[in-house]
Image (cartoon, rainbow over all chains, first blue to last red):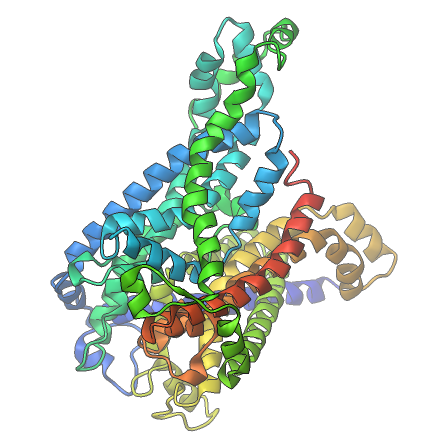
Length: 277
Length: 324
Protein backbone atom coordinates (compact mmCIF):
# COMPACT_ATOMS: atom_id res chain seq x y z
CA UNK A 1 0.00 0.00 0.00
CA UNK A 2 2.72 2.42 1.02
CA UNK A 3 4.83 1.51 -1.96
CA UNK A 4 1.91 2.02 -4.28
CA UNK A 5 1.26 5.45 -2.87
CA UNK A 6 4.89 6.36 -3.32
CA UNK A 7 4.79 5.17 -6.91
CA UNK A 8 1.72 7.33 -7.42
CA UNK A 9 3.54 10.31 -5.89
CA UNK A 10 6.43 9.87 -8.30
CA UNK A 11 4.03 9.47 -11.21
CA UNK A 12 2.25 12.71 -10.32
CA UNK A 13 5.54 14.56 -9.99
CA UNK A 14 6.78 13.23 -13.30
CA UNK A 15 3.56 14.37 -14.93
CA UNK A 16 4.06 17.78 -13.31
CA UNK A 17 7.56 18.04 -14.75
CA UNK A 18 6.30 16.97 -18.17
CA UNK A 19 3.48 19.56 -18.23
CA UNK A 20 5.89 22.23 -17.02
CA UNK A 21 8.37 21.34 -19.77
CA UNK A 22 5.75 21.38 -22.54
CA UNK A 23 4.22 24.68 -21.42
CA UNK A 24 7.47 26.52 -20.81
CA UNK A 25 9.42 25.16 -23.78
CA UNK A 26 8.27 27.85 -26.27
CA UNK A 27 9.40 30.59 -23.90
CA UNK A 28 12.69 28.80 -23.34
CA UNK A 29 13.13 28.43 -27.07
CA UNK A 30 12.66 32.16 -27.59
CA UNK A 31 15.24 33.06 -24.96
CA UNK A 32 17.76 30.45 -26.05
CA UNK A 33 17.43 31.45 -29.71
CA UNK A 34 17.99 35.05 -28.68
CA UNK A 35 21.40 34.11 -27.27
CA UNK A 36 22.55 31.97 -30.19
CA UNK A 37 25.04 32.92 -32.85
CA UNK A 38 23.46 33.31 -36.32
CA UNK A 39 25.32 30.27 -37.55
CA UNK A 40 23.84 28.10 -34.78
CA UNK A 41 20.32 29.33 -35.46
CA UNK A 42 20.43 28.34 -39.10
CA UNK A 43 21.39 24.77 -38.39
CA UNK A 44 19.34 21.74 -39.31
CA UNK A 45 20.27 20.15 -35.99
CA UNK A 46 19.13 22.75 -33.47
CA UNK A 47 21.21 23.34 -30.35
CA UNK A 48 19.21 23.15 -27.16
CA UNK A 49 21.63 25.20 -25.11
CA UNK A 50 23.29 28.17 -26.79
CA UNK A 51 27.03 27.67 -26.77
CA UNK A 52 28.82 29.92 -27.16
CA UNK A 53 26.17 32.43 -26.08
CA UNK A 54 26.17 35.86 -27.64
CA UNK A 55 24.54 39.23 -27.07
CA UNK A 56 24.83 40.24 -30.72
CA UNK A 57 21.13 39.58 -31.42
CA UNK A 58 20.12 42.00 -28.69
CA UNK A 59 22.57 44.56 -30.05
CA UNK A 60 21.10 44.09 -33.50
CA UNK A 61 17.52 44.47 -32.23
CA UNK A 62 18.30 47.59 -30.20
CA UNK A 63 20.02 49.25 -33.13
CA UNK A 64 17.26 48.56 -35.60
CA UNK A 65 15.42 51.53 -37.08
CA UNK A 66 12.41 52.62 -35.04
CA UNK A 67 13.06 50.42 -32.02
CA UNK A 68 13.59 53.27 -29.59
CA UNK A 69 10.84 55.41 -31.09
CA UNK A 70 8.47 52.43 -30.71
CA UNK A 71 9.43 52.01 -27.07
CA UNK A 72 8.86 55.70 -26.49
CA UNK A 73 5.49 55.65 -28.28
CA UNK A 74 4.40 52.60 -26.31
CA UNK A 75 5.36 54.30 -23.06
CA UNK A 76 3.51 57.51 -23.95
CA UNK A 77 0.35 55.60 -24.85
CA UNK A 78 0.57 53.32 -21.82
CA UNK A 79 1.06 56.16 -19.34
CA UNK A 80 -1.68 58.32 -20.85
CA UNK A 81 -4.25 55.52 -21.03
CA UNK A 82 -3.46 54.14 -17.60
CA UNK A 83 -3.56 57.56 -15.92
CA UNK A 84 -6.84 58.56 -17.53
CA UNK A 85 -8.51 55.22 -16.92
CA UNK A 86 -7.42 55.02 -13.31
CA UNK A 87 -8.78 58.45 -12.39
CA UNK A 88 -12.12 57.93 -14.15
CA UNK A 89 -12.42 54.33 -13.02
CA UNK A 90 -11.61 55.09 -9.40
CA UNK A 91 -14.39 57.68 -9.18
CA UNK A 92 -16.88 55.32 -10.82
CA UNK A 93 -15.78 52.38 -8.66
CA UNK A 94 -16.24 54.51 -5.53
CA UNK A 95 -19.82 55.19 -6.57
CA UNK A 96 -20.47 51.50 -7.21
CA UNK A 97 -18.82 50.17 -4.08
CA UNK A 98 -19.63 52.81 -1.48
CA UNK A 99 -23.06 54.14 -2.44
CA UNK A 100 -26.45 52.58 -2.91
CA UNK A 101 -28.37 54.33 -5.64
CA UNK A 102 -30.96 53.69 -8.27
CA UNK A 103 -29.52 52.08 -11.39
CA UNK A 104 -26.44 50.67 -9.67
CA UNK A 105 -27.06 47.02 -10.56
CA UNK A 106 -27.90 48.00 -14.13
CA UNK A 107 -24.64 49.90 -14.41
CA UNK A 108 -22.70 46.91 -13.09
CA UNK A 109 -24.32 44.70 -15.72
CA UNK A 110 -23.41 47.23 -18.41
CA UNK A 111 -19.80 47.30 -17.21
CA UNK A 112 -19.57 43.51 -17.38
CA UNK A 113 -21.40 43.31 -20.71
CA UNK A 114 -19.34 46.01 -22.34
CA UNK A 115 -16.16 44.04 -21.69
CA UNK A 116 -17.58 41.27 -23.84
CA UNK A 117 -18.00 43.43 -26.94
CA UNK A 118 -15.44 42.17 -29.42
CA UNK A 119 -12.80 44.83 -29.88
CA UNK A 120 -12.27 43.54 -33.41
CA UNK A 121 -15.82 44.55 -34.30
CA UNK A 122 -15.32 48.06 -32.97
CA UNK A 123 -12.26 48.77 -35.07
CA UNK A 124 -14.33 49.76 -38.11
CA UNK A 125 -16.48 52.46 -36.45
CA UNK A 126 -13.56 53.64 -34.31
CA UNK A 127 -11.42 54.08 -37.40
CA UNK A 128 -14.16 56.02 -39.18
CA UNK A 129 -14.80 58.24 -36.16
CA UNK A 130 -11.11 58.99 -35.74
CA UNK A 131 -10.68 59.71 -39.42
CA UNK A 132 -13.54 62.20 -39.19
CA UNK A 133 -11.82 63.82 -36.23
CA UNK A 134 -8.44 63.76 -38.04
CA UNK A 135 -6.97 61.56 -35.33
CA UNK A 136 -5.72 58.73 -37.55
CA UNK A 137 -1.95 58.23 -37.35
CA UNK A 138 -1.78 60.15 -34.08
CA UNK A 139 -0.95 58.73 -30.68
CA UNK A 140 -3.80 60.74 -29.16
CA UNK A 141 -6.27 58.83 -31.34
CA UNK A 142 -4.89 55.51 -30.16
CA UNK A 143 -5.09 56.63 -26.54
CA UNK A 144 -8.79 57.39 -26.95
CA UNK A 145 -9.57 54.03 -28.53
CA UNK A 146 -7.68 52.12 -25.84
CA UNK A 147 -10.05 53.52 -23.25
CA UNK A 148 -12.72 51.24 -24.79
CA UNK A 149 -11.21 48.16 -23.24
CA UNK A 150 -9.12 49.54 -20.37
CA UNK A 151 -11.72 51.72 -18.66
CA UNK A 152 -14.51 49.14 -18.11
CA UNK A 153 -11.95 46.65 -16.87
CA UNK A 154 -10.48 49.15 -14.40
CA UNK A 155 -13.92 50.13 -13.08
CA UNK A 156 -14.78 46.50 -12.50
CA UNK A 157 -11.52 45.53 -10.82
CA UNK A 158 -11.31 48.62 -8.62
CA UNK A 159 -14.88 48.06 -7.50
CA UNK A 160 -13.79 44.63 -6.30
CA UNK A 161 -10.85 46.06 -4.36
CA UNK A 162 -13.02 48.77 -2.79
CA UNK A 163 -15.63 46.22 -1.74
CA UNK A 164 -12.84 44.40 0.06
CA UNK A 165 -12.33 47.32 2.45
CA UNK A 166 -14.66 46.92 5.44
CA UNK A 167 -17.16 49.74 5.74
CA UNK A 168 -16.74 49.75 9.53
CA UNK A 169 -13.22 51.13 9.29
CA UNK A 170 -14.33 54.33 7.59
CA UNK A 171 -17.32 54.71 9.85
CA UNK A 172 -15.13 54.33 12.90
CA UNK A 173 -12.84 57.05 11.61
CA UNK A 174 -15.79 59.36 11.12
CA UNK A 175 -16.88 58.73 14.68
CA UNK A 176 -13.43 59.78 15.75
CA UNK A 177 -14.19 63.17 14.31
CA UNK A 178 -12.95 62.63 10.79
CA UNK A 179 -14.92 64.09 7.93
CA UNK A 180 -16.01 61.72 5.20
CA UNK A 181 -13.20 63.07 3.05
CA UNK A 182 -10.70 62.68 5.90
CA UNK A 183 -11.74 59.07 6.39
CA UNK A 184 -11.36 58.56 2.67
CA UNK A 185 -7.84 59.95 2.54
CA UNK A 186 -6.52 58.40 5.76
CA UNK A 187 -8.33 55.05 5.84
CA UNK A 188 -9.73 54.00 2.50
CA UNK A 189 -6.96 55.23 0.22
CA UNK A 190 -4.07 53.49 2.01
CA UNK A 191 -6.07 50.26 2.27
CA UNK A 192 -6.99 50.23 -1.38
CA UNK A 193 -3.56 51.38 -2.59
CA UNK A 194 -2.30 47.87 -3.42
CA UNK A 195 -5.44 47.38 -5.49
CA UNK A 196 -4.81 50.64 -7.31
CA UNK A 197 -1.26 49.56 -8.08
CA UNK A 198 -2.34 46.11 -9.27
CA UNK A 199 -5.08 47.52 -11.49
CA UNK A 200 -2.83 50.10 -13.08
CA UNK A 201 -0.15 47.51 -13.73
CA UNK A 202 -2.72 45.35 -15.39
CA UNK A 203 -3.93 48.25 -17.51
CA UNK A 204 -0.28 48.85 -18.38
CA UNK A 205 0.14 45.26 -19.57
CA UNK A 206 -3.00 45.28 -21.70
CA UNK A 207 -2.06 48.52 -23.40
CA UNK A 208 1.56 47.47 -23.86
CA UNK A 209 0.41 44.28 -25.65
CA UNK A 210 -2.36 45.72 -27.83
CA UNK A 211 -1.80 45.13 -31.51
CA UNK A 212 -4.64 45.63 -33.99
CA UNK A 213 -5.84 49.11 -33.11
CA UNK A 214 -2.30 50.42 -33.18
CA UNK A 215 -1.68 48.52 -36.42
CA UNK A 216 -4.70 50.09 -38.13
CA UNK A 217 -4.43 53.57 -36.70
CA UNK A 218 -0.70 54.23 -36.76
CA UNK A 219 0.54 54.11 -40.31
CA UNK A 220 3.84 55.97 -40.14
CA UNK A 221 6.76 53.93 -38.92
CA UNK A 222 7.91 56.52 -36.43
CA UNK A 223 4.49 56.47 -34.77
CA UNK A 224 4.13 52.73 -34.28
CA UNK A 225 4.10 51.01 -30.91
CA UNK A 226 6.29 48.10 -29.88
CA UNK A 227 3.96 45.21 -30.87
CA UNK A 228 3.45 46.72 -34.34
CA UNK A 229 7.19 47.16 -34.69
CA UNK A 230 7.71 43.57 -33.60
CA UNK A 231 5.08 42.23 -36.00
CA UNK A 232 6.75 44.01 -38.91
CA UNK A 233 10.10 42.43 -38.14
CA UNK A 234 10.08 40.03 -41.06
CA UNK A 235 11.98 41.70 -43.85
CA UNK A 236 11.98 41.00 -47.56
CA UNK A 237 15.22 39.09 -47.17
CA UNK A 238 13.48 36.61 -44.90
CA UNK A 239 13.17 36.48 -41.15
CA UNK A 240 16.21 37.07 -39.00
CA UNK A 241 15.22 34.79 -36.17
CA UNK A 242 17.98 35.72 -33.74
CA UNK A 243 17.24 39.46 -33.58
CA UNK A 244 13.50 38.75 -33.75
CA UNK A 245 13.63 36.47 -30.72
CA UNK A 246 15.85 38.97 -28.89
CA UNK A 247 13.34 41.72 -29.64
CA UNK A 248 10.45 39.48 -28.57
CA UNK A 249 12.23 38.72 -25.30
CA UNK A 250 12.75 42.42 -24.68
CA UNK A 251 9.06 43.15 -25.41
CA UNK A 252 7.91 40.41 -23.06
CA UNK A 253 10.34 41.22 -20.24
CA UNK A 254 8.52 44.15 -18.58
CA UNK A 255 5.22 42.29 -18.88
CA UNK A 256 6.64 39.19 -17.22
CA UNK A 257 8.13 41.20 -14.37
CA UNK A 258 4.90 43.10 -13.73
CA UNK A 259 2.71 40.08 -14.23
CA UNK A 260 4.55 37.93 -11.72
CA UNK A 261 4.15 40.64 -9.09
CA UNK A 262 0.42 41.08 -9.49
CA UNK A 263 -1.19 37.96 -10.92
CA UNK A 264 -2.50 36.81 -7.54
CA UNK A 265 -4.28 40.09 -6.84
CA UNK A 266 -5.75 40.37 -10.28
CA UNK A 267 -6.91 36.80 -10.83
CA UNK A 268 -10.40 37.46 -9.51
CA UNK A 269 -10.79 40.47 -11.76
CA UNK A 270 -10.07 38.28 -14.74
CA UNK A 271 -12.93 35.95 -14.02
CA UNK A 272 -14.98 39.07 -14.33
CA UNK A 273 -14.13 39.24 -17.99
CA UNK A 274 -11.11 41.36 -18.34
CA UNK A 275 -8.31 40.23 -20.55
CA UNK A 276 -8.73 39.70 -24.22
CA UNK A 277 -6.81 36.94 -25.93
CA UNK B 1 0.32 47.48 2.21
CA UNK B 2 2.37 48.74 5.13
CA UNK B 3 -0.41 51.18 6.00
CA UNK B 4 -2.88 48.45 6.78
CA UNK B 5 -2.05 47.84 10.46
CA UNK B 6 -2.90 51.42 11.43
CA UNK B 7 -6.56 51.00 10.62
CA UNK B 8 -7.81 48.41 13.13
CA UNK B 9 -6.85 50.67 16.05
CA UNK B 10 -9.48 53.22 15.05
CA UNK B 11 -11.92 50.47 14.23
CA UNK B 12 -11.83 49.35 17.84
CA UNK B 13 -13.64 52.50 19.02
CA UNK B 14 -17.09 51.35 20.09
CA UNK B 15 -19.44 54.25 19.32
CA UNK B 16 -20.35 53.76 15.67
CA UNK B 17 -24.11 54.15 15.70
CA UNK B 18 -24.87 57.87 16.18
CA UNK B 19 -22.66 58.89 13.27
CA UNK B 20 -24.44 56.49 11.04
CA UNK B 21 -27.84 57.84 11.93
CA UNK B 22 -26.72 61.39 11.33
CA UNK B 23 -25.69 60.45 7.81
CA UNK B 24 -28.76 58.58 6.74
CA UNK B 25 -29.44 59.18 3.02
CA UNK B 26 -32.01 61.81 2.22
CA UNK B 27 -31.22 64.01 5.20
CA UNK B 28 -29.04 66.17 3.03
CA UNK B 29 -30.54 66.49 -0.40
CA UNK B 30 -27.24 66.98 -2.26
CA UNK B 31 -25.84 63.66 -1.12
CA UNK B 32 -28.11 61.70 -3.41
CA UNK B 33 -26.34 63.21 -6.39
CA UNK B 34 -22.85 62.19 -5.28
CA UNK B 35 -22.72 58.69 -6.82
CA UNK B 36 -24.08 60.01 -10.12
CA UNK B 37 -21.47 62.77 -10.16
CA UNK B 38 -18.75 60.20 -9.51
CA UNK B 39 -20.02 58.02 -12.34
CA UNK B 40 -20.57 60.82 -14.83
CA UNK B 41 -17.04 61.12 -16.29
CA UNK B 42 -16.67 57.37 -16.80
CA UNK B 43 -20.13 57.12 -18.31
CA UNK B 44 -19.40 59.99 -20.68
CA UNK B 45 -16.22 58.28 -21.90
CA UNK B 46 -17.92 54.88 -22.23
CA UNK B 47 -20.73 56.43 -24.28
CA UNK B 48 -18.22 58.21 -26.50
CA UNK B 49 -15.80 55.35 -27.11
CA UNK B 50 -18.10 52.33 -26.84
CA UNK B 51 -21.79 53.05 -27.10
CA UNK B 52 -21.57 55.51 -29.98
CA UNK B 53 -19.13 53.36 -32.01
CA UNK B 54 -21.45 50.37 -31.47
CA UNK B 55 -24.35 52.42 -32.77
CA UNK B 56 -22.23 53.58 -35.69
CA UNK B 57 -21.25 49.98 -36.44
CA UNK B 58 -24.91 49.03 -36.68
CA UNK B 59 -25.72 52.01 -38.85
CA UNK B 60 -22.69 51.46 -41.13
CA UNK B 61 -23.89 47.93 -41.78
CA UNK B 62 -26.91 49.45 -43.59
CA UNK B 63 -24.79 51.77 -45.71
CA UNK B 64 -22.69 51.64 -48.81
CA UNK B 65 -19.47 52.98 -47.27
CA UNK B 66 -16.32 52.78 -49.37
CA UNK B 67 -13.25 54.94 -49.77
CA UNK B 68 -15.26 57.70 -51.48
CA UNK B 69 -17.74 57.83 -48.62
CA UNK B 70 -14.91 57.74 -46.11
CA UNK B 71 -13.39 60.87 -47.61
CA UNK B 72 -16.78 62.55 -47.89
CA UNK B 73 -17.66 61.45 -44.32
CA UNK B 74 -21.05 60.32 -45.49
CA UNK B 75 -22.40 56.93 -46.46
CA UNK B 76 -25.28 55.99 -48.74
CA UNK B 77 -28.20 54.15 -47.15
CA UNK B 78 -28.78 50.76 -48.79
CA UNK B 79 -31.04 48.98 -46.31
CA UNK B 80 -30.32 45.29 -45.94
CA UNK B 81 -28.15 45.04 -49.06
CA UNK B 82 -24.91 44.38 -47.15
CA UNK B 83 -26.53 41.54 -45.24
CA UNK B 84 -27.97 40.12 -48.45
CA UNK B 85 -24.52 40.28 -50.04
CA UNK B 86 -22.71 38.47 -47.23
CA UNK B 87 -25.42 35.87 -46.71
CA UNK B 88 -25.43 34.93 -50.37
CA UNK B 89 -21.63 34.86 -50.40
CA UNK B 90 -20.42 31.29 -50.01
CA UNK B 91 -17.17 32.60 -48.50
CA UNK B 92 -19.10 34.11 -45.60
CA UNK B 93 -20.82 30.82 -44.84
CA UNK B 94 -17.49 28.98 -45.04
CA UNK B 95 -15.85 31.47 -42.73
CA UNK B 96 -18.73 31.31 -40.26
CA UNK B 97 -18.61 27.51 -40.14
CA UNK B 98 -14.81 27.54 -39.89
CA UNK B 99 -14.91 30.04 -37.04
CA UNK B 100 -17.49 28.00 -35.14
CA UNK B 101 -15.39 24.83 -35.53
CA UNK B 102 -12.19 26.69 -34.65
CA UNK B 103 -13.83 28.14 -31.51
CA UNK B 104 -15.27 24.77 -30.50
CA UNK B 105 -11.89 23.07 -30.82
CA UNK B 106 -10.01 25.83 -28.98
CA UNK B 107 -12.52 26.14 -26.16
CA UNK B 108 -12.96 22.43 -25.53
CA UNK B 109 -9.22 21.69 -25.60
CA UNK B 110 -8.48 24.72 -23.41
CA UNK B 111 -11.08 23.63 -20.86
CA UNK B 112 -9.98 20.00 -21.03
CA UNK B 113 -6.27 20.63 -20.49
CA UNK B 114 -6.97 23.49 -18.09
CA UNK B 115 -9.06 21.18 -15.91
CA UNK B 116 -6.49 18.39 -16.02
CA UNK B 117 -3.69 20.76 -15.05
CA UNK B 118 -5.81 22.22 -12.23
CA UNK B 119 -6.43 18.70 -10.89
CA UNK B 120 -2.73 17.94 -11.25
CA UNK B 121 -1.84 21.13 -9.32
CA UNK B 122 -4.10 19.98 -6.50
CA UNK B 123 -2.15 16.72 -6.20
CA UNK B 124 1.38 18.10 -6.45
CA UNK B 125 3.58 18.80 -3.45
CA UNK B 126 4.30 22.44 -2.53
CA UNK B 127 7.59 22.68 -4.43
CA UNK B 128 6.34 21.17 -7.68
CA UNK B 129 3.13 23.16 -7.41
CA UNK B 130 5.08 26.41 -7.13
CA UNK B 131 7.23 25.43 -10.08
CA UNK B 132 4.30 24.55 -12.33
CA UNK B 133 2.33 27.63 -11.29
CA UNK B 134 5.34 29.85 -12.07
CA UNK B 135 5.64 28.21 -15.47
CA UNK B 136 1.96 28.82 -16.16
CA UNK B 137 2.22 32.46 -15.08
CA UNK B 138 5.22 32.90 -17.38
CA UNK B 139 3.19 31.61 -20.34
CA UNK B 140 0.19 33.71 -19.31
CA UNK B 141 2.38 36.81 -19.36
CA UNK B 142 3.54 36.34 -22.97
CA UNK B 143 2.21 39.13 -25.21
CA UNK B 144 0.28 37.73 -28.19
CA UNK B 145 2.63 39.17 -30.78
CA UNK B 146 5.57 37.58 -28.98
CA UNK B 147 3.78 34.23 -28.62
CA UNK B 148 2.91 34.06 -32.31
CA UNK B 149 6.47 34.84 -33.33
CA UNK B 150 7.84 32.12 -31.07
CA UNK B 151 5.49 29.49 -32.47
CA UNK B 152 6.13 30.47 -36.06
CA UNK B 153 9.82 30.09 -35.37
CA UNK B 154 9.34 26.70 -33.70
CA UNK B 155 7.33 25.51 -36.71
CA UNK B 156 9.61 27.08 -39.31
CA UNK B 157 9.83 24.70 -42.25
CA UNK B 158 13.61 24.84 -42.54
CA UNK B 159 15.14 25.35 -39.12
CA UNK B 160 12.13 24.82 -36.87
CA UNK B 161 12.74 22.74 -33.79
CA UNK B 162 9.40 20.91 -34.10
CA UNK B 163 10.20 19.40 -37.48
CA UNK B 164 13.58 18.33 -36.12
CA UNK B 165 12.07 16.72 -33.02
CA UNK B 166 9.30 14.93 -34.91
CA UNK B 167 11.85 13.49 -37.34
CA UNK B 168 14.28 12.50 -34.58
CA UNK B 169 11.50 10.76 -32.65
CA UNK B 170 10.69 8.80 -35.81
CA UNK B 171 7.12 10.07 -35.90
CA UNK B 172 7.64 10.72 -39.58
CA UNK B 173 9.80 12.58 -42.04
CA UNK B 174 9.15 16.24 -41.34
CA UNK B 175 12.33 17.66 -42.86
CA UNK B 176 11.26 20.81 -44.73
CA UNK B 177 7.62 20.20 -43.90
CA UNK B 178 5.67 23.44 -44.33
CA UNK B 179 2.80 23.38 -41.82
CA UNK B 180 1.15 26.47 -43.28
CA UNK B 181 0.96 25.22 -46.84
CA UNK B 182 -2.13 23.28 -45.86
CA UNK B 183 -4.64 25.56 -44.14
CA UNK B 184 -5.94 22.78 -41.88
CA UNK B 185 -2.58 22.13 -40.25
CA UNK B 186 -1.89 25.86 -40.39
CA UNK B 187 -5.07 26.63 -38.49
CA UNK B 188 -4.26 23.77 -36.12
CA UNK B 189 -1.02 25.52 -35.20
CA UNK B 190 -2.87 28.81 -34.80
CA UNK B 191 -5.31 26.97 -32.52
CA UNK B 192 -2.36 25.57 -30.58
CA UNK B 193 -1.04 29.11 -30.05
CA UNK B 194 -4.45 30.21 -28.77
CA UNK B 195 -4.85 27.18 -26.50
CA UNK B 196 -1.32 27.40 -25.15
CA UNK B 197 -1.90 31.03 -24.23
CA UNK B 198 -5.32 30.37 -22.68
CA UNK B 199 -4.56 27.30 -20.56
CA UNK B 200 -2.75 29.11 -17.71
CA UNK B 201 -5.69 31.38 -16.90
CA UNK B 202 -8.16 28.49 -16.92
CA UNK B 203 -5.89 26.15 -14.94
CA UNK B 204 -4.99 28.70 -12.27
CA UNK B 205 -8.58 29.91 -11.84
CA UNK B 206 -9.92 26.36 -11.64
CA UNK B 207 -7.21 25.40 -9.17
CA UNK B 208 -8.23 28.35 -6.99
CA UNK B 209 -11.79 27.03 -7.22
CA UNK B 210 -10.71 23.49 -6.35
CA UNK B 211 -9.14 24.66 -3.10
CA UNK B 212 -12.60 25.91 -2.10
CA UNK B 213 -14.16 22.44 -2.35
CA UNK B 214 -14.60 21.17 1.24
CA UNK B 215 -12.14 18.37 1.95
CA UNK B 216 -14.60 16.56 4.24
CA UNK B 217 -17.00 16.08 1.35
CA UNK B 218 -14.32 14.49 -0.80
CA UNK B 219 -13.14 12.24 2.02
CA UNK B 220 -16.66 11.17 2.93
CA UNK B 221 -17.36 10.22 -0.66
CA UNK B 222 -14.10 8.28 -0.89
CA UNK B 223 -14.97 6.44 2.34
CA UNK B 224 -18.32 5.55 0.84
CA UNK B 225 -16.40 3.83 -1.92
CA UNK B 226 -16.63 6.41 -4.72
CA UNK B 227 -13.67 6.29 -7.13
CA UNK B 228 -11.79 9.46 -8.16
CA UNK B 229 -13.83 9.82 -11.37
CA UNK B 230 -17.10 9.52 -9.46
CA UNK B 231 -15.94 12.01 -6.80
CA UNK B 232 -15.01 14.46 -9.54
CA UNK B 233 -18.32 14.06 -11.36
CA UNK B 234 -20.65 14.13 -8.36
CA UNK B 235 -18.91 16.52 -5.98
CA UNK B 236 -16.19 18.64 -7.55
CA UNK B 237 -18.00 19.34 -10.81
CA UNK B 238 -21.30 20.58 -9.31
CA UNK B 239 -19.46 22.87 -6.87
CA UNK B 240 -17.26 24.29 -9.63
CA UNK B 241 -20.11 24.63 -12.10
CA UNK B 242 -20.37 28.44 -11.90
CA UNK B 243 -16.62 28.79 -12.52
CA UNK B 244 -16.88 26.37 -15.44
CA UNK B 245 -19.72 28.34 -16.99
CA UNK B 246 -17.88 31.63 -16.57
CA UNK B 247 -14.59 30.29 -17.93
CA UNK B 248 -16.29 28.60 -20.87
CA UNK B 249 -18.24 31.70 -21.87
CA UNK B 250 -15.12 33.85 -21.59
CA UNK B 251 -13.15 31.38 -23.70
CA UNK B 252 -15.87 31.28 -26.35
CA UNK B 253 -15.91 35.06 -26.52
CA UNK B 254 -12.13 35.34 -26.77
CA UNK B 255 -11.65 32.48 -29.23
CA UNK B 256 -14.50 33.47 -31.53
CA UNK B 257 -12.82 36.80 -32.23
CA UNK B 258 -9.28 35.51 -32.77
CA UNK B 259 -7.50 37.89 -35.08
CA UNK B 260 -3.92 38.66 -34.05
CA UNK B 261 -2.72 35.07 -34.22
CA UNK B 262 -3.93 34.58 -37.80
CA UNK B 263 -2.86 38.00 -38.95
CA UNK B 264 0.69 37.86 -37.61
CA UNK B 265 1.23 34.18 -38.43
CA UNK B 266 0.30 34.86 -42.04
CA UNK B 267 2.45 37.98 -42.24
CA UNK B 268 -0.53 40.34 -42.60
CA UNK B 269 -1.71 38.65 -45.82
CA UNK B 270 -3.88 35.69 -44.88
CA UNK B 271 -5.39 33.84 -47.83
CA UNK B 272 -9.12 33.11 -47.87
CA UNK B 273 -8.76 29.65 -46.38
CA UNK B 274 -7.25 31.26 -43.28
CA UNK B 275 -10.14 33.68 -42.74
CA UNK B 276 -11.88 33.62 -39.39
CA UNK B 277 -14.78 36.03 -38.74
CA UNK B 278 -12.66 38.83 -37.29
CA UNK B 279 -10.09 38.50 -40.06
CA UNK B 280 -12.78 38.47 -42.72
CA UNK B 281 -14.46 41.59 -41.34
CA UNK B 282 -11.08 43.29 -41.15
CA UNK B 283 -10.09 42.40 -44.71
CA UNK B 284 -13.46 43.51 -46.13
CA UNK B 285 -13.11 46.85 -44.34
CA UNK B 286 -9.47 47.78 -44.51
CA UNK B 287 -8.17 45.90 -47.55
CA UNK B 288 -11.08 46.04 -49.98
CA UNK B 289 -12.33 49.29 -48.37
CA UNK B 290 -15.91 48.05 -48.07
CA UNK B 291 -16.58 49.37 -44.59
CA UNK B 292 -20.32 48.73 -44.86
CA UNK B 293 -19.82 45.05 -45.68
CA UNK B 294 -17.18 44.71 -42.99
CA UNK B 295 -19.57 46.29 -40.50
CA UNK B 296 -22.32 43.82 -41.46
CA UNK B 297 -19.94 40.91 -40.79
CA UNK B 298 -18.92 42.47 -37.49
CA UNK B 299 -22.58 42.91 -36.51
CA UNK B 300 -23.19 39.21 -37.08
CA UNK B 301 -20.17 38.54 -34.88
CA UNK B 302 -21.43 40.82 -32.11
CA UNK B 303 -24.89 39.23 -32.30
CA UNK B 304 -23.45 35.75 -31.81
CA UNK B 305 -21.32 37.02 -28.93
CA UNK B 306 -24.38 38.59 -27.35
CA UNK B 307 -25.94 35.16 -26.84
CA UNK B 308 -22.84 33.91 -25.01
CA UNK B 309 -22.58 37.13 -23.01
CA UNK B 310 -26.14 36.62 -21.85
CA UNK B 311 -25.24 33.29 -20.23
CA UNK B 312 -22.13 34.81 -18.74
CA UNK B 313 -23.96 37.74 -17.16
CA UNK B 314 -26.75 35.50 -15.93
CA UNK B 315 -24.16 33.40 -14.12
CA UNK B 316 -22.50 36.51 -12.65
CA UNK B 317 -25.89 37.67 -11.35
CA UNK B 318 -26.59 34.21 -9.97
CA UNK B 319 -23.37 33.97 -7.97
CA UNK B 320 -24.05 37.43 -6.59
CA UNK B 321 -21.25 39.32 -8.32
CA UNK B 322 -23.62 42.03 -9.47
CA UNK B 323 -25.56 42.76 -6.27
CA UNK B 324 -22.93 43.30 -3.63
